[in-house]
Image 1 (cartoon, rainbow, N blue to C red):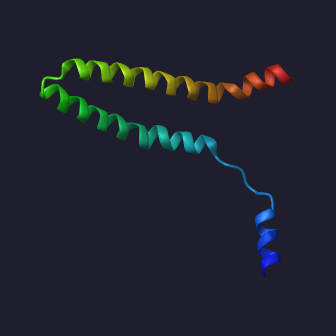
Image 2 (cartoon, one colour; image 1 turned 180 degrees about the vertical axis):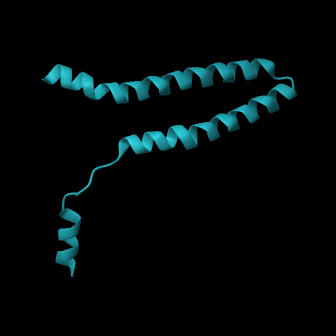
Amino acid sequence: MIATELTILAAEPSGSINTEGIVTFFASNIAPILLAVLGVIFIGRASRGEISKVLTSSAIAIVGLAFIAGAATLFFVGESIIKLIFN
């Protein structure tokens, strides 16, 4: 019994991870929800008169989105860059 469990654990994975599906899922489902939550927080702060905190948080969120977009672009373009360099 233990030997078969160890054999199963030591076996190589047969499939691959669908990274494009994962990125598409996050971009289409998770990102809009997070942006909506940020919007509600910003509106709540602005209604209390904390405009400077809202502007600061908005700028940080925009910079964060730019980094995420850059990482996603590098993720999709990276394979062609690697093929160009190593071929």
